[in-house]
Amino acid sequence: MAHMNQKCAAWVIDLLEIQPNDKTLEVGFGPGVGIELLTKAALEGYVAGVDPSQEMVAQARARNATAITSGHVDLRYGSAESLPFEDNTFNKALAINSMQVWMDAAAGLREIRRVMKAGGRIALGFTPYSGQQKVGLSDRLAAAGLVEAHVVETDTGFCVLAIKPRPDEGQMQSNIGTE
Ligand SMILES: C[S@@+](CC[C@H](N)C(=O)[O-])C[C@H]1O[C@@H](n2cnc3c(N)ncnc32)[C@H](O)[C@@H]1O
Image (tube, rainbow, N blue to C red; front, side, top):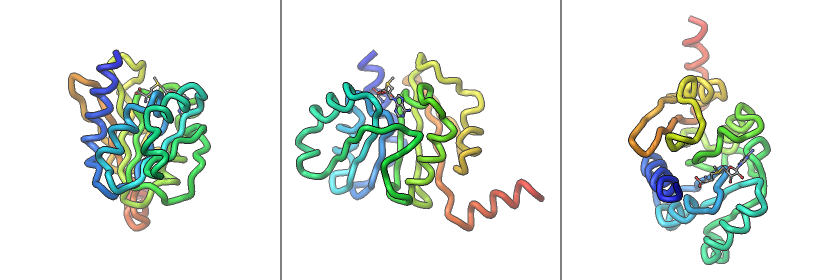
């Protein structure tokens, strides 16, 4: 299962097309395997994460100790529903096998939208046995104000991708609904 999770994390990170300077957020990082992969992809960027489990934060901090010391990585206690970051901070955000256990997924998605920059990309990945339903997933992201939401799938699992709209794009989306 650990191998499957790592493979899913690598796949989702690939889908996000992380650039060396990206500022990336992982929500629900667990033992920090995804964070470790992100630091290798965003070599000159910044990687932050939140997880509400003290045990997971301790494990992830130990796994990424060198990158934390150098200021490349910042791992905090916290939950999706109340992210401890400023508005418009990140240009990539992801969560792997996590949204299905959030107390309030709609609030978590709105929070991710808030902390992302306009044009930033979000990817939520799930392994086949995560318990997350594929049906309605894109609609949940759209309801949180994200655009171009769509699901992609491989034998590793499935992933919903979306974008935080630029202000003019958000207006266009709401006009489409009223015409
Ligand atoms: C199944 S684990 C997945 C961990 C990691 N992403 C992975 O793929 O190995 C789910 C993670 O979500 C975290 N989590 C639970 N509730 C959360 C919430 N409300 N906000 C953010 N993360 C949460 C858990 O503590 C746990 O680390």
